[in-house]
Length: 98
Image: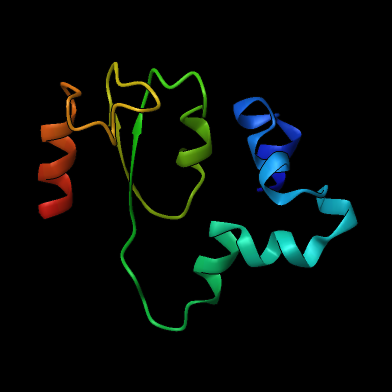
């Protein structure tokens, strides 16, 4: 979440959610950051990120640095991966169901 705050991800969505800057409450950021949380999980858990490469809200680069498998959906925007009416949703469903 640190990079996301610095990069003004989603027009400041992370800072709005957290309500405080990282330098003012480092522990809160470590507790909520998915990368930090993944490192604390004792068992090995497979994580697969799905991200549209046309996402103008959250740059796909943020998912590329996450320690997980990543599927980039060519042409998909921010909401396409969760919208059942999206032309990409069948591909997302198939990825999730394996």
